[in-house]
Length: 291
View (tube, rainbow, N blue to C red):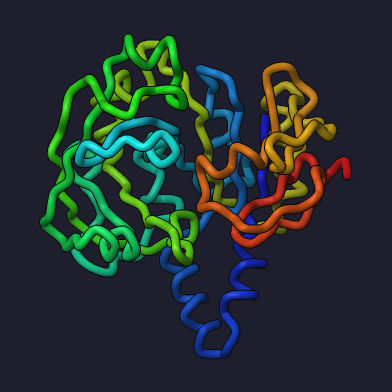
């Protein structure tokens, strides 16, 4: 089990700057209901209701990693996508501000929203479409979502852009490609075509706490209690220069190296057990406890 404290406050302090900027950030915070922590169990069939029921938890939305192509483009380095995996993600937790159009209908698999950067780079406006190419489950199961061929061999779906949005978790980064975020209905209807018949994925629970980030020390032992105590941590080796930390459980890991699957890339780096979050990246609260 991995518990991550999301560094919203640190980022906002650095980004806000002037008083006018502070007030606009405050407004965005109030409107988007940002998450304060992220929980990743790294085990199939995890029972999220136990986490939702904790007294500190105000809201919890699920994300999953999946693979598809867009308009036939399937560069393996760019096509591992974050997919809303329940009706709480981007609704009750980290609900984006709509800059144009509206949010995607959670009952319609053929709707998506984009960030401003993605719209700009791809010349998109509300009402434009993208072709999503999905994979056959039998292609995904032997390889996993990180080893798939660049050409999708499963069903295709024409997805309409219904909104341009902004949020903290799905923020555009300077020089980045932006993001396209499909409706949760795409995940619900085509789950085997994105995860395989084995339905394995690294799920991420975005957690909003009643007491904000100040409630994380109280939340941490409660999380450990309902997950059989699998939150102790110890340093692990680096991989390709990326700082990593591993939770002391054979079924759990605490890897900042997997965070690019969820968060925009960071140009920062730090020590393997650093509790200070670089840029927008979160720090691992369970590792910070033992640092």
